[in-house]
Image (tube, rainbow, N blue to C red; front, side, top):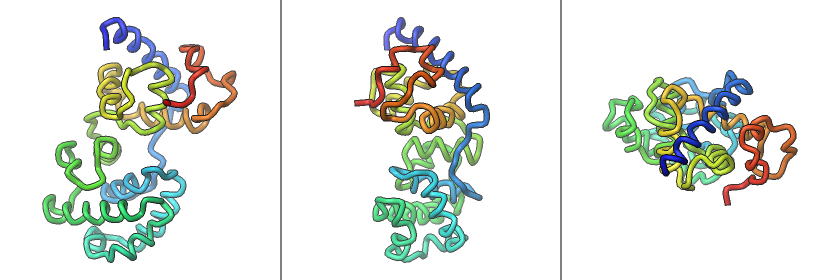
Length: 221
């Protein structure tokens, strides 16, 4: 990112974020959970799945599996059926039960509080790590970059990259650290309620006054 682009994008994202704060002052994670471990499970399940569906599945799941030890000793085929409707259930079951084993073996049954440690769990990359650390512990090490954020960044020309890790690095340079934890949830609410991936009535979108070219761009590819 050139110095000129950096300056221009910093000014733009500050204006966009200020407007997002007004639009969604109470933006927060939509997933239901009671413990840091349950949050890990819910976030893993949320990949390529709606939060509404995940919350429906975890309502029964968290009643059935109440302790980490119950996940460690769960039958994987049975567990797959428990989460089947979230999609990609083979991989998700393997990751969740594998993460439970590692937590019990290497972390005393506790979800770790650092990015370096939490990303040692299967199925947990930086996006999930950022969500869990920030939401469960108030530990902010980065910005969670999901499909809503990737689309937002592309539409409002905030990065030259399409890869989540590189986009996160750019956003961390553009945004003040005190904004990192909540930015993602504001963008998610914006994408869900105002600006979906498909064509929509742009006259109802207040962010386009800040950056009009975004009115012509919907998808990231």
